[in-house]
Image (cartoon, rainbow, N blue to C red):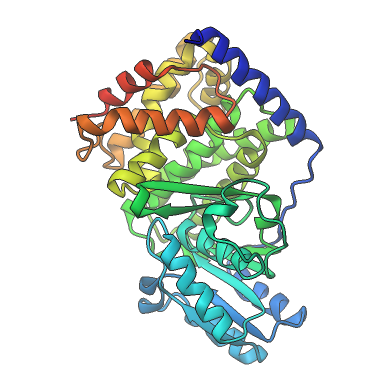
Length: 403
């Protein structure tokens, strides 16, 4: 059996290669429209580039509550024919991707507009990629497996959480295998995106909290990553400061348009950071909670984050201290160790304030070995975490989350 110390050394060597790649590989960013009403500006841009038939990928609830009405009216005014695929559900599945692809082909659509939360944007990305790559989603899983550029892709997020409008990633669930397929390729970054806070003012508190904590997890794990770079650090700290300031505001007053716009930008910054620096064990475990129990991703991240930070702390006290400073938690006499503890405690207090539990009710003891195995496989192949763990350690950590 290979000693864990040798495995850790191998993981770190692999992550150094990924860091070098991240430094030299171009990571495109979408042309960005920002501010209330920017979603309508994006519609104008879509028309200006000559799009005549557009597939809108969204979920049925957004259509039902009329959030898409302004977009539809603007596209019609501009003479753009559009067709709505509203079959996306949380944690979009391969079957949903194929259904959207069928609608796209049937109507001769030449571009995709993803409208909604992270699930809708991820689904839109993969539908656009499937339209030009004649192979199943599973064959596109992993790094750089999308050989042909997707159809032109545009994104309008309606939550401030995933940052999928700027990331190179998309996640698709496979219920039969109880797993999630992560596709990672710079070709998945939308050509244009709009951060329109006016679309987010009606979000209920539970979704506001979960998506906001998702964005915070992106920023925190990117900052703690061994593969962090100076520019990713800047974005991660900026995102952390904005979220800590404005997430409590929008939880108290969801109609606060200024705070909603700041949260949209924070989500974007956090996603820019983790696109290069990566995430870590929080995401790896949370992804599997989603695969096994359909736990909403942001909620799962929020639950898991304090446990992983407690474990990681010995190797990243200084960085946790910087996050505490960015969060406005520092006092003059605080040592780095005190600040690190303050930051983790503050995350726990935010969870409690927002109604996010410390434990996962659905977690079953018999699932823990498989969840740990899958989480470690994901993390050790992709994430430059500050402190590695073996399977018994991971199982013990997950067991702490069980009621």
